[in-house]
Amino acid sequence: MRTPTYFKPWALQWPLGIRIALVFILATGTVQFVVFGMTQNYVMAYFGAEPQDVSFALQITYCGIVAALPFQFRFVRYFETRNMLATALLASILLSVSHLFVSDIYVFIFLRLLTGFAVSVIAASALTLIFSVLPPAKIPTVGLSMFFGTVLCSGVIIGILSGWVVSNIEWTNIYYYMTMIQCSTLVLVFLILNPTNNLKKYPLYQLDWTSATLNLVALVSFAYTILYGPSKDWFDDPVILCSSVVSANSFGLLLYRQSFLKRPYIHLDTFKSPSFYIGIILLILFYVVKDSLNIVYAYSSAILQWPIERLIMLALTNVAGIVLGIWIMALPVVLKTVANKYAFLAGFSLMLAYHLWMYFSYSSDISFNQLIIPVFLQGTACGVLFVPIVRFVVSTAPMYTGVSATVMATMARFASSVISISAFFSMQRYYNLLNKQALLRNLTDFDQNFTATITQNVALYESLGFPGAQARTLAFVEVSKSLAVQSQLRSNMNVFMIMICILILLLAVICFAPPIFKLGQSLLARKDGQ
Image 1 (cartoon, helix red, strand yellow):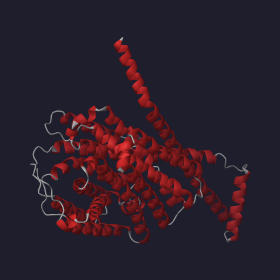
Image 2 (spheres, one colour; image 1 turned 90 degrees about the vertical axis):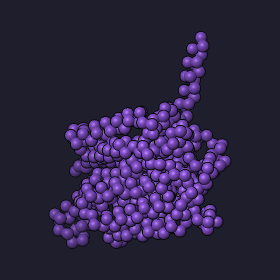
Image 3 (tube, one colour; image 1 turned 135 degrees about the vertical axis):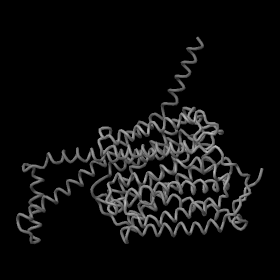
Image 4 (cartoon, helix red, strand yellow; image 1 turned 30 degrees about the horizontal axis):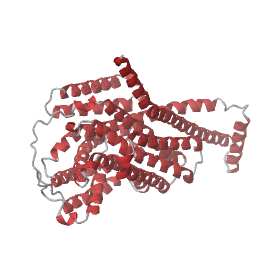
């Protein structure tokens, strides 16, 4: 068996440098995916689009990544790794430049899909290189945790930094910064990687392009259905109904096709273990409850109007927690001694503590210092849960299924992201309306606080030189703004309470389900013995 020679001799003398370079290469790919996460308002204004259009444009990149990912691990065993990375980075540079000349939202969405294909090549190549520098026992757990951790950390950091860019200069300058990063990575690839990797080539025969197309259609239709459903009254809209039917049929045809292929696109034996379904459900629930942090960022930015520098510090606090959690859980002693059940309990307990903290301390004038500890707790909870959940999902799949478990975990990540966006939008819209109606019922001329506030505001505006009628109008506008803030505040607290209930139920299931299941098995065995 040939020993791969990915790296140049001088680079091998600096193992830490290689690992840092590989993380940077992986982050370059994920940057393209998450760069617009914190600048959606600017994207909407530039294209004249709806929030759902921008969310769909962001998620369709994930569709491209997931659809192309099964092929990438075949490609890295045939093409030279340096050539693959260089080609993908050149394509990414061309796509970044192309974005500068786009003014139509549908062209933007198509370019985002192509970006997903490029990101999948970069991610698969970078993961292959990362696997090559890890001990075999750590490859499934640490390698994939590094991938998902990089996606999350880079999403927070790059999203906030891109927010700083758009708040100081024209938002399209993001593309210039992206191009600079990609060019730097391209130079790095040529510096540290050998032209040939000395691996035996595996021919690219029986690549199932039909399954990849079915998967892509299913994922795009699923994203459209879930993201646009709340604003279009779900299945009352014929387009939503059609997209849901297309998604279900495409998934069904995809699974049916895998049943008779010699080299399936996704190995169906991955689904034979009940533990695999448990792992996927845990992964989806984890990402859903984790995304409540976006409410804090949105509230701090839009309502409290914090400067971008303060948001960056808050995001870095969260990233510090993520890194700490992943580092602790990836320690060899922790991997060997801490069972998945106790890791789940620790991680979800930290996540529960964060939500409880936010629910009881959330207010219209919450300060930066009040958010540091809960945001750090949330990051630590994410880091603690990353490694055991990935380890649990990967370990449930048979070895001969290859990368199918990895693909399914990535698909679950995509589905949870889409579902959380739609769920949080629906919950906030519902509770916002409900809370606003509840507050409006108390705003009458018989309410002393309301009349006192109006009188005080009228006097304030009259002292500034406004005539009586205009001062009264402005006083009501001021009360309306306060009403909107209070309604949004209560809506966010309602969402936090829902997340608290989900986490309490989940922790109870993790604690009591295994012994109850074992007790049931023993009773059945005793009954059969009789």
